[in-house]
Length: 499
Image 1 (tube, rainbow, N blue to C red):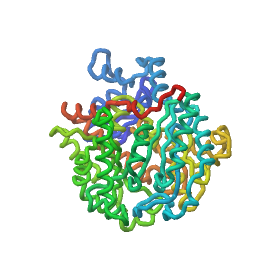
Image 2 (cartoon, rainbow, N blue to C red):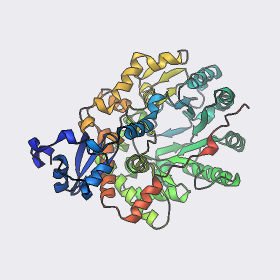
Image 3 (tube, rainbow, N blue to C red):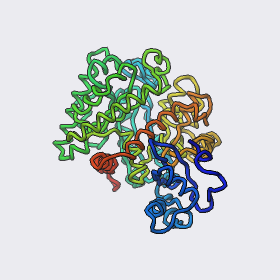
Image 4 (cartoon, rainbow, N blue to C red):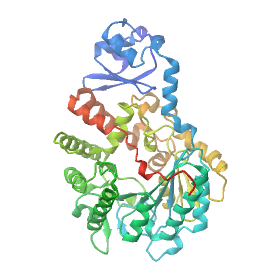
């Protein structure tokens, strides 16, 4: 049902309204503005709204005033400050710096995005000299915070350089005084007690992959030396127990784990969620299979349609809500990010759902040979033989990396305001793009949103969440509000004072 079909255009009082977008959700209209406000309206209320026929004191008028939909009642200075706060990332350079320490890996994951090689290929390791140049560049960012994320391959295979980066960055931060943190993405297969002692002492956050119960996980994440699932779950428990022994709140501090949803998992949403609950996770981030690396080549056996994923996602989140009502506190992280934007009026700075997107100005990726890419996904594209997203090397200056023509093009392509469909979408204030995904799936940085599976995924999840909000009972609203409560993990921040 379009606006012209519901209201005669000559009766629309555009000058009295803040620009808005609209979409039918259930039996009502969802209306949003660029400030990030929204309201649900019946057909009659929608007609009254667009014809500017409300009057002060009417319940509808007061709802529209509170939502900043009536032009004459908007406090411009207050809303400008609000917008600036949510868009503060525009004033900073990249915060996330992904260091690929090696291409070596001892797993054979069927959907691997990286260009992995055998464990004997030490020639693919990042050198100390390259690592130091990468750290030097990372500290030139104008962002007050720097997160160095170790990736691979399996980053623990290049342990010496990992330690060197941590110590070198901590020394630099004694003068820079940034909010510095480290994270390690690892399959945990090379973990031992000495490494764990070091990582805990240096406050390195740990993240791993867990695709569900043992039969599902081990079928996809192949480890020739035994059960990858048994290994991962064992180390997760040991690390979580160490956090408790250190006096850290077990509700906040635990190993982060991520599942990648493949075709064999589609009918097992309950098993995936139950596995996460059983190992003590308070969050599940349900991730669709991406079109990069091995995943693109194994699509015939692991892939599925976006409709299949959306149905899986809805089933899983409904089950997660059911568990919460029974007293088990667990959340779905993608929903929590979206709800934080909608309900809490916050910008979590999740790079896939912001505009402009995260390419170059939100994150950059450092390959072992010193090549620098727009993001981790840009590196994945390079691993498939296409250097489209290579923006420089560690021998370049920071200014050149951030201001060259390629970086500017990627930032401009990541703007919702530059997309014909995005600019008129009701979810525009909360959504975003990933130019690497557009390029890989549609051959263009800009993509075509109405044909994009990226757009379909996010729009479908937004539709589901908005339908839930439109009819949510008080208990569900309390659950959603708990999911959007921001808790800072201060323990993982490095001390800013001199070492």
